[in-house]
Length: 120
Image (tube, rainbow, N blue to C red):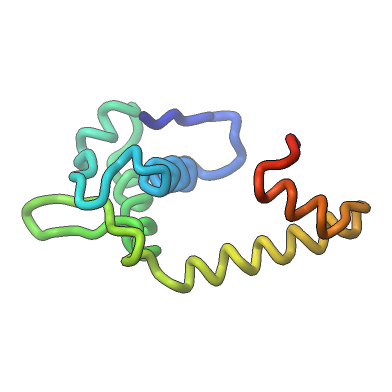
């Protein structure tokens, strides 16, 4: 489900958070599906439960999961994900497009790539 790369310079909680986001966005974890408990995931990955807790807090803050007292954490519906995250990603996309233009790609090449017309 989730793998940790200890050579990755990103903190472990960020790696977990990003992997969980991918699973939720791709539909591998369905909306309202119960997430593994902090303890279960910590044992499965052999890491400190506080690291998992921090990743879950960040995911909840971004709207990817929600918590129910006494029940655990669950994957959120797409419409529940914070609109701020959408704005954040669009800003990142705009910055990336500017850099690609600087590197010589045309708008058409960038758009074709976004549509799946070119391999990286």
